[in-house]
Image (cartoon, rainbow, N blue to C red):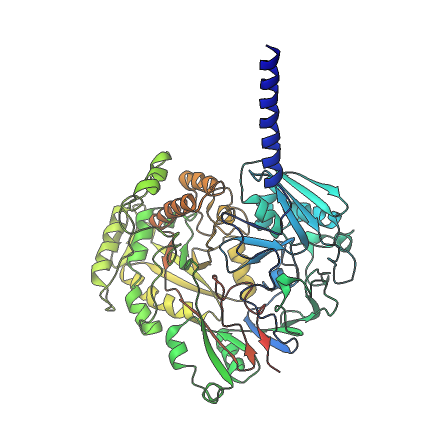
Length: 604
């Protein structure tokens, strides 16, 4: 009996020792973390694969932008700040490699540690990490940044804060974050929040700041000059703490970056042709082919580069605000899509050179497959209670025209759908059963010439259906204010999507964020099925499950008919001065955040 109890105790001890050993091995501090796979780069990597570690340092880069700005704080709801500041003026604990779907490497933090289920994550700050005023980045700065951004910052930061159970200092340079839900992506998202200096905001209203407070930065670039609404200049900090970091080797090469603002894209293009701006992106294939033949291109002073990528197309087009009663019926939204003569518009805009966006995740393994839902995708859609719009299970396809201006077949379908929704034409005007005329406005920003041309052709077709359309052209500040407050009927829409969708999808499509000011759910999507899929995507633990969930989401979004898709750009088209160079190896995500101007340099 004694021998049996001894053996039993020994077995239990061995089991206990084994699990302790396994858990200890799995939760050791690491230099990197990946959402699903192992990090692509070894712990002793020299530089990111899409950077040139021997790139020259120096020179001035002049960039152009359309619009204006009235703030240098990109982390709050109030005001309009240059979007670049969010990425060029701040750093996070971990940095993302854009050559992998979702992998982070140490930046401000030298290591990351998490448990096997990723219910908590612990970061250890680098000794050398400093702010631009040469003060050290502390755990107190980290904790304050997470709480401040999570409670009074922009909506994109508040979702994570709601999922944090505790954040605590565990050592002189260590901070541990525990989560209140099972969501393996949170450990990675926690490493991507910008770190601000706590002392700079002592007795200052962070959420109401605008242009009067220049941020103290952890990044290589600091703001050196601001001309409100006109230009902003950033200079590389010669004492930047991360100069020798492998993650930063061959990046951030310009001494100075200037962003100049212009009234519209035509003026910006003319400034580029005159040599006042160094770089110009062109989304229109026809213009790229026929309007980039000015003297500087012909002489070789300007180079036309095309940057390939492997990311989803995302969605671009005209979004319908389904909060408006007039757009609440899917049959009305379908009719408005049928009335949009894409083939004719594409020929007029691009000589038919660009392909139409077929779904939100098209051009990737995450996009819905043609035809009826099958296997795991079908199972996911069937598992959830709730009504599905036509096209969800059988597959939704955008209507095609014969390319003629009249678009007769689709216009007849549009009229039938409008009649089913309770509308009828009386003396050339479309009315509902209460005698209210079908009319709405399309909100455009002044200078958005591409969309203005598209909308003018579209409006002509809608008037043939008896629909009165008003095109509202407003200045940049008024446009973004109305978009923020959801004060629009229809407006241009653009949503980039990644190869590793996760918690950000909640901001884009969830019911919770459908009606808040500044939401990214512009269409007002409120779907219990989508909400449940969003909960699934945040807990998926394999690439296969992620693909199935996004394909199911893609079906719901397309069958919802919230956006009238236009064309996608394909490879990025960048015209630039010949002395601006970039590595020949381009990352998986192509020309996106982390590529330009990060790995470019000036050959001077």
